[in-house]
Length: 115
Image (cartoon, rainbow, N blue to C red; front, top):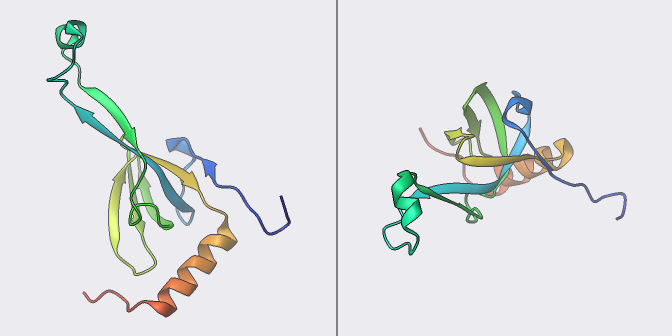
């Protein structure tokens, strides 16, 4: 690995803090297993959980504005805000220099959100 390559680090919910740059690693969806061959799943009455990779919009770097677990309030480079539930979203910490560079470049090249 060269000097300019950094790695994203998977985060536990309690490690997330204000000002940190994060990205979504996976999104967990819950399904009722209607077409499952195993009867034991129905007997337990539990939903089936599957983790999916984020689409292009969900994979962009975000900046943490506030944390009140299990909720994380974030903003993207266009200043759109949203709340992520860490029971559903698996987050990774992005290198601070990478995050700042992404936000600076994206803010310059895209029109800011209008309120």
